[in-house]
Image 1 (cartoon, rainbow, N blue to C red):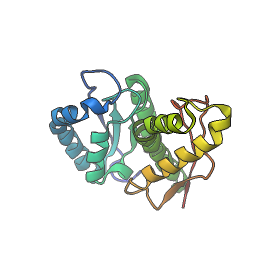
Image 2 (cartoon, rainbow, N blue to C red; image 1 turned 90 degrees about the horizontal axis):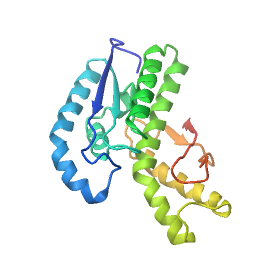
Image 3 (cartoon, one colour; image 1 turned 30 degrees about the horizontal axis):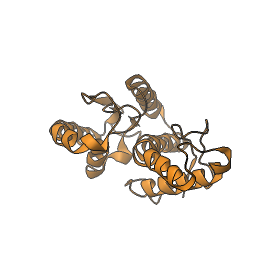
Image 4 (tube, one colour; image 1 turned 90 degrees about the vertical axis):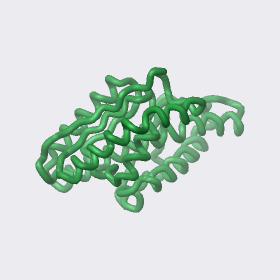
Length: 207
């Protein structure tokens, strides 16, 4: 990042007609319906990246989490680690605002340290917006229900819950080409700021 033409380009994925979170019950039909348009968008992203442009991707297909089809296509194009910015969390406004600010910060990164911080934040977005919100959050709720009979952790469950989430996020990181083997989650850093599963935070460090 930070090389090439230093020109920003942006892509916003359109929201699904349901206007609600990703749901496994609709996943197959929505994938079939949206795949052609998404494939075209990702092809263009790949072309821009290979041409040296800095690309911002605002993933607003679903509120409160990434579009797994988009992430799969970006992984296939091998451009995940080369984007200037990615956002796919919460509302469309929050996602677009975060991605724009992130992309501008990447554009202005000049030193090796600044570029490393930009890469770190990009990985954090993937792990939070895709890894946690899409992959881990509902699984964590099911694990809590099965293990303790609760939907959100009580005080006595927090340590075990954070450890469980850390393991799952580490597995998600291992599936991100360009980041796996270079970055890791700081051991013991996973936090649930409001002692509920909706929000998560964690720290990252280079291996």
